[in-house]
Length: 193
Image 1 (cartoon, rainbow, N blue to C red):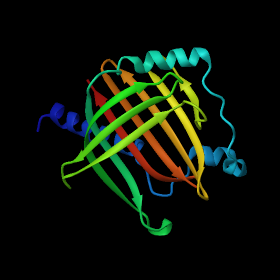
Image 2 (spheres, helix red, strand yellow; image 1 turned 180 degrees about the vertical axis):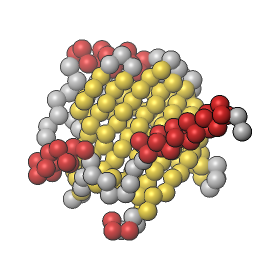
Image 3 (cartoon, rainbow, N blue to C red; image 1 turned 90 degrees about the vertical axis):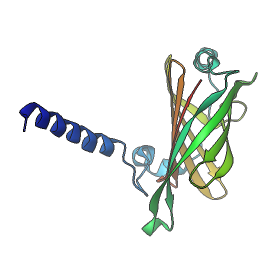
């Protein structure tokens, strides 16, 4: 067997094996913020709205996707069952979407999804910022945005960490959700025009 051929396949196998572990999520994994904040994790703090400069940067980040017919896909990793025996499931759907920026700074993405395997449709409505939003900007650059939202729903503490990246005509939104500081689901949405 050719040494180069063997070497190339060994390198490819190592890359695939290690790269899949980097993004692996397990049911009941702790939120990085849960670890860092300890007891104060359960406190819900008031969030300041984005500054004028941040609003300008957000407008620049999202404006290229307004008034465009967006298409793409979603991969949803979900934990189902009781906490002690939760199992991961993965669902893949096809998407069509529209993005809109409102005058109060709110960014709204209305998505229609189609699950080809189950032959079902659904709606996904994402919104960021705006009045009384729990969204806190962690990082904002010309092509990347990281948001952390923490809110109480009924008696549950919910946390979402959303990473949005823009590259040319592509918009990627990765949201990792935690309930009571433990992993609940991860949604990866990839849209383009």
